[in-house]
Image (cartoon, helix red, strand yellow):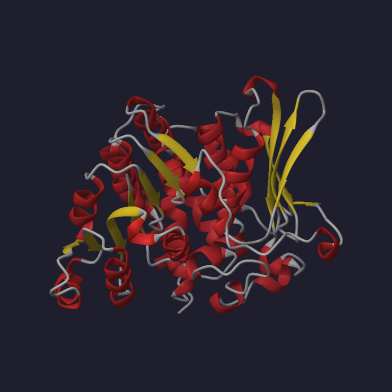
Length: 394
């Protein structure tokens, strides 16, 4: 019997790698693909839908529906569009869901997918950063298995197999340090989005690459770690590891540290989630320790990368502080890409919005629903846009 799968965000880097692995394991002959989704890259979305014989193809852009329908004319594949189209596809029960829509937009369909059980392979960081208590509670209530796809959290998940969380002393996230790891703080004032996209180890999309350069990506992973593994923020550490060979580590009460090593290839963690609870061969180059030669580790420069401390602050404040953090971060990222604010302004903006919305966000505790998250997200974005307008460099 074929496994039913849906791929949310199939045209992004994570989604494309997921499609390639599914095709390598038999494609439509081995998997019943229910839905593939994307945004503006309609030709790729339509191509994926046809190759995988998907039931639904969904673009998140409502105005693109007619174009998608034209591309899929005669295929028998149903075209959907907009947030409602994503939710309609997410309501169809499947055995395995890849949640890889980038940004806050991935939260609602991810929550909907969590309500019909099965396995969610989670690449959408915002689901836990913005609504960790709600998302984890929804998974528990519906018997949904949540498997992390971030290489760091997949590494931690694998290192914890067969272990007791009561014996875990700390979790250590590794960070490459991005393209500005060795640049002095003074040189970051005028960096461009193009420079920030030149990640030394990973080939990722624009927004994720810039998040990595500012270490906002790692900051979000700190928050994710708390919810995925139920561990307090003061037991989560971040170290800079330029080679990106050690994907993360778990330290135990007896002094032992379990490290997960592997190639810098996202197909490793995607393939692990796709084939869980088994392991299957993946089309990866063998990991060559001799060629690697050395492993380096260093402390995070918090003056240069204040984003990480902002994540710890969000954990301390609790409630919906993570949603405020993320909304401000997304607005800051868009402002930087547009040239309205500088690279270093992004963390300043986020800190300002957290200061402004802190009291309102903290009042919820762990009890809130999606509408609460959406409201706080909206309020935070308004505050962020106001800050950008006052500090506009153009």
